[in-house]
Image 1 (spheres, one colour):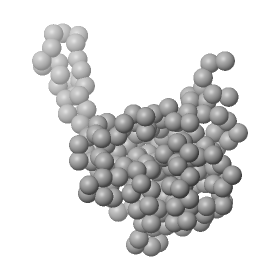
Image 2 (cartoon, helix red, strand yellow):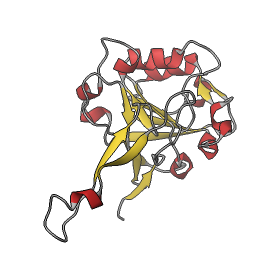
Image 3 (cartoon, helix red, strand yellow):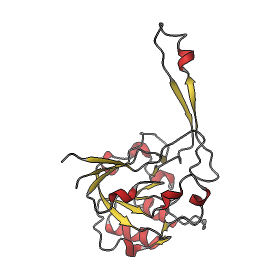
Image 4 (cartoon, rainbow, N blue to C red):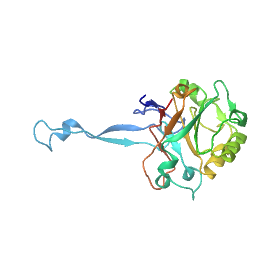
Length: 219
C-alpha cells in the first residue's frame, strides 16, 4: 500500500501573526512579472519574491542555539535528527498542563514525540495566545531521560507563557532535543504508525526557522 503524506504545517501568508508581539512576515515581489518583461524576450516573464520575516514564523523548529549561545544552530543539525524519525502520537485534547504521566508507557527513545492538544483550532484568533496548553518541567525531564529526539506540539508555545521562565525549552534544548511548535492536523496521526519530517534550511547563526513539517503514514 502506498505511503500517505500528512501536512502538519500552517500556511504562511503576508501579514500573518504567529506570536503575539512579534512582527508579521512581509511577502511581496522583488521582481514582478510585469517588470521582468524589460529583461527577457517577448513572451518570457518571471517573478522573484522577497520575504522579510522573523525566524519564529508559522510552524517552526527550535534547535539548541535558540536558547544557548554555544548550542548547535540550524546549519549543524544532522538530517538524521530532523528527517524520517519514527513518530509517537500523544493524545492531550482539552489539557492545559501536560505532565510526564502523558508519556509514561510510550517508547519515545530516538523518536519524534508529537503532542496533540487540539489548540490549533484557535490558529489566527486572539484565543490562540491565551491560556494555551504546555508541557511541564517534569514532562521535559522525563522525555530527556527516556531518550526522545524531538518534541512537537500544536500550541502557541511548549512552555507556559504566563511565566517568564522557560523550563521546557531550557531542558530539551540543553540536551539537544529539538522542538517544533505551532503544528496542526495532529489528530490525523492517532492510531497510526508514521515517520516525521521537519527540515529547515542550513542557516549559520540561526536557532529557529519555519519548516514544512509532515508525517509519512506507514500503517
